[in-house]
Image (cartoon, rainbow, N blue to C red; front, side, top):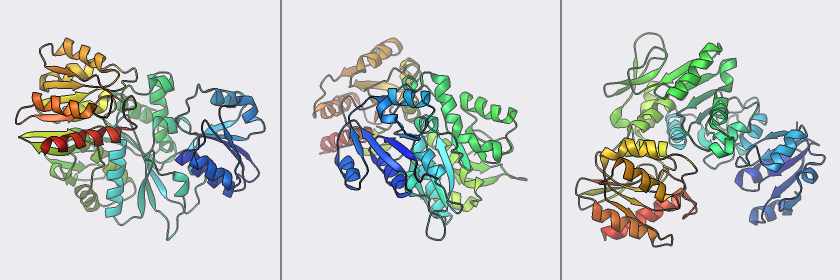
Length: 463
């Protein structure tokens, strides 16, 4: 398929390096371009793969190129992508390449997308599949390249739990997972996509196989997702359309009856999948994530008992509504992964009385609706980061008497000051919740490091 083809790989991080190595092994003439030299570019060059450092003229880079494989972060308006499209060059990213490299006996893909909850759902799904005795892994947008996981047969994977971002789905054209779930849709990455409609349109690619018999799973409690799922029905998709809801599910769907997660996708009576007590981390959003994972597992024949065992034994990923400590009757929770208002709302509505730690890079997303919704739960707020003034203004509108502490410093001691301020505001029975509703890169190298800094400061406070 690729022997003799000229392929330019833009980006030499984990996925780009994996693509370059795989393509070179298939006989493609590969060149890698990256803005800066690194250990990875040196390693690729040492294997004989030409590496270009910097940002040369796109026309020169693309001369004679058949395919452009981009890191998902490259937007459609990037000069290289624009020039490739104008030249009729096929542009795609690592998951699309992995899909094209599938072997006949390769693993089935079960994919998850959405604005929030992707990693939790994918790792829940992997736990369920493992409980069913299937050889599986959680891959994709969570950091492990898919191109390295296509071997099937007795020693390879049978089913892959795949997280797909809107970026990755935008840069796909044939990728059609055997089952795809859309968790939710809220404003995010609008600058990258050029508007919400383009963002939502990219997400719907997770359902591409519905036209040929694949399973499409969608959140009936999210009006935007429900409308898109109904659109598939109107288009007469040939595969099953499975909704999930926190309410009693209609036939063909999964949902909740009292304290039980139930399956109504088959004929006859509803079947128990798990109980609410089996689901962790806590929160309605994680029950929804569990239902989505269960629906995908059902699409490949996983038994109900395996779904329950997988969910009950699931170990949550770090920085997702994770309890850090209880100090003096105050519970401290790290939800640093809440990098937008939609994600923050999920954890903020899981607790009754909160001291909210928020702030960072809002990425142009409006914070007002979230602030209005959660204001009655707030006992105080501590704000940090570059866009903290926008959150402070929203709090002034919707909770004018709320005590708010502004932490202006951005050095290594900032989070310790934040935690000390939150401790002064909190009373026994309160939850101090780091749910920033914003990205972290203004102050921290990642949301994980932000969460670690919070946890370290809390443990220092505890003595």
